[in-house]
Length: 493
Image 1 (cartoon, one colour):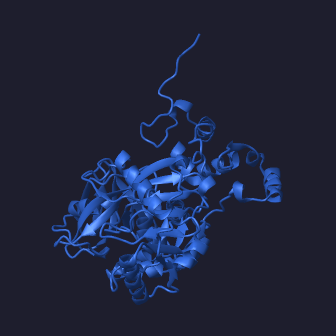
Image 2: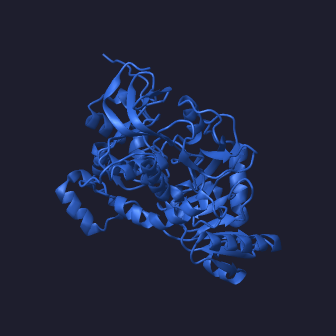
């Protein structure tokens, strides 16, 4: 199966380093267990977690009685405590589903009734006058809206990175660039290989996102209960100069394809538009298209006509794992033990509201593992947080002076757009699961995420990576692998 069998035999191995898999590993680290996360990419949060709407949904949309409904509402409630423990920015700004006419008005009534049945607190119907007062930039064609005060916004990849750091300091091992190519059942569990190394585990958690059905097949499962359809969503991110265009998360009335194009502030002060919803054959095709971006702009302008797309600083897309049942109908989250493979737990088809649900999904997943026979005592050394993270741009002048007095590296601004210092970049490299390439630094510090698109700060970040990692400049990569930033050098005499 593989060239090397790891000496450590794990109690649980989680396939997939997205928010669902990482939070599940973190919950497992509360116990005296040997836990591993197997991730195909160079970092956590590289699939749907990295590219989604960043919305913590209130929970009025899922079908009552479904796992989506119960875990969404519970996860939304838990998000405040989780982000506080992990020192991750989270703002409970509320959401508005906006109606345009009598038919939409009736839809809002149905959504409110559904939300009440799901246990969503504080739902209100706002009339046109209230909307104008609260959201003055909203279209004058808007007739009413459903207000959900518990909805919020969070940076999904920062949350995932923080959870991974927390899991790591509590003993979870992370294997990156581990593309599962084989799963063998053994008398004591599973032997999982990527073709070059092998990990043994008693229990296996399938949190592989859009590839969950493929992992099930590798494990020997036939007739996977759901069909995973890759659905691409394209987005536009606008400059912070227009970040105050909306005060709440703004939705149009939902359709069978999803929640439609939204307009939302981000926790970092930008404005996010999107997503589209296009079924595609390639599960890894994260390209953006002229047609998709045009649809994003048009949909956003339906909500807020004055949006200026000349303030766009980047476009991106993400692939969400949309589940369908065997009759072709939209399916619920698949969170249950395999009925064919003992010791295998599926966390599959977790599309929106997966981010909002993730705190509750992870706890539910661990409870299922215990019901499957996993036994463990609490870990008395468990720490819920992670090493302190410094955000220089959020400090006042006195705090900055004190910090620079302790470490002069915090007095050197590397990224002017986002006010990121050398000290923060060094810290990002030295932290648990530290940065090893330019994009990893970007996701941990925001260096390069500003208006200039990293045009000014990249060479300086590369120098710091080279120095801290003890590698030459031409070994520094953008995103791992062979993504070298300096293709070669010219010798001079």
